[in-house]
Image (cartoon, rainbow, N blue to C red):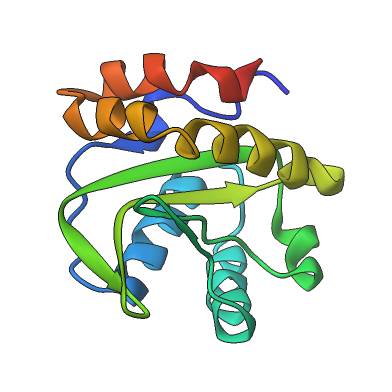
Length: 144
């Protein structure tokens, strides 16, 4: 499960100001990384229609539907942090973490992300990180 997250897949200052743009932004990083085909981003919107990917502690984890698994080339995540909270169905989101997993690999990745974001102190560190390198170091557990 190594290298699901690289420094190039992290944005410390996301440009989105709403949920749809945040999903698009997280998805485009996965496309640019060569992990998914553009059709996967459409599937991220389909997933969001059926169930909110808001997880709590300023975190949303947009990901595609099971039908989109053919659009995934390799397991990967994208991390986008927002300076101003994004309204995610009435909840505040500061992190959109896009996930794509081969052979149900997304479940393991989801678990690792959930552990980090379940700790308020860790979330505070992620919010305070001054660079993509610092965020990468704080999220290194997803590559283990």
